[in-house]
Image (cartoon, rainbow, N blue to C red):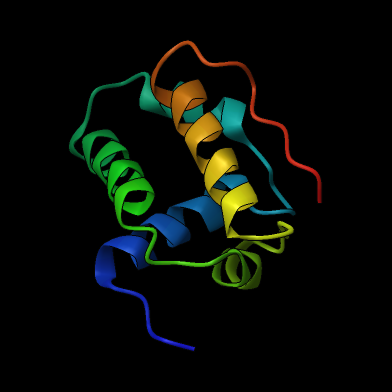
Length: 97
């Protein structure tokens, strides 16, 4: 297993806190992001970074959040849907775990 870069790790840590299997809270996260802050801007940049670089895998995500995806493509489709929900008018992101 390769180690993750700091931005991907920071993003995973936020996903663990707000979107892990035990708390799955995209609604709460979206509410928190409604307040413009340095953290919300950093999280958005980290979403973009993770989607652009794809430096983590579905296994990395599962180890940190306890949410499994069939493959990396399914993970990144979900991450994109989650970003669209959180930062624009996308529908609530569903996942099949």
